[in-house]
Image (cartoon, rainbow, N blue to C red; front, side):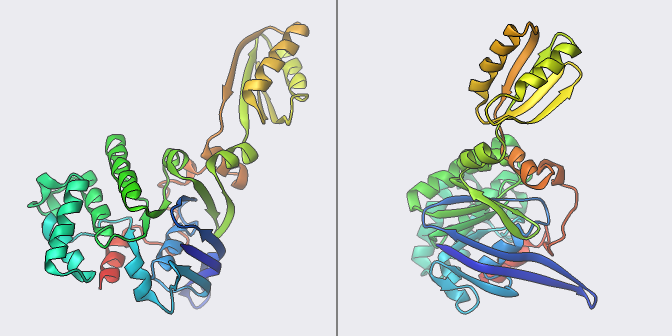
Length: 341
């Protein structure tokens, strides 16, 4: 469904300054996959999505979407994709049904088919009670459901979601994803998602691609990435600091133990198998006469993966205003209108 080779994008800021937003991304995504793209603000995620959706042209490299070159065949690419950007794509003075009907006509449906398609999406995404309301009067969650409906008007085989649930409360996020996943199953779509919500990527994506400084630095299933790049964390507290020092030495002999940290009476260690290693450490502590007061196993998260890869937490980069790849957080409206045109 998507294939890129050495894809790059540079933004010329001034005569003496160029931002290298994307630095040679090579990526393949098969039909039917749900792939999450993770990275901090400014990593190049949105710039890559905009190149794949023909909103901006690559500086170099190649990319095909649904078998069509994004530079040579942009119209054919746009017929095959639905795009939900970071901002709301619907016109604020438009009514919900009218906006969906208009989008259907823009994509080449006749009037009868456009009305039928609008009705199907209104029902599927539970917008029935909102059909006569103006977009400006909708809540954030309602607008995002409308954005998804607009992206699905022409039943595309590929849906690109650029941080679709940003700013929504947990209930609205869960509700939005329930609709998206149901529509995916119904239409057998490929979905490419960028998000800062790691629980979304962890629970729903079949693959996770980690991007930093405009490059892909990891690409695998969430479970494999967590096992290989993070590992389980065991945390044990001894009754005194001397016992903790002995626990730290014992931890060194656990299978694939690393990153052992001694902090007062507390010992932390990364291991490949936390549920197996912790009982082993407890037995050795008992044999050595070390009294343990607490013991825990923490399973790794995708943020642990990112921390291991880059030396920083993905959460630390959220909302910090970092935006070094030429991305414009409020530019999605313009891009969506440009795509429609």
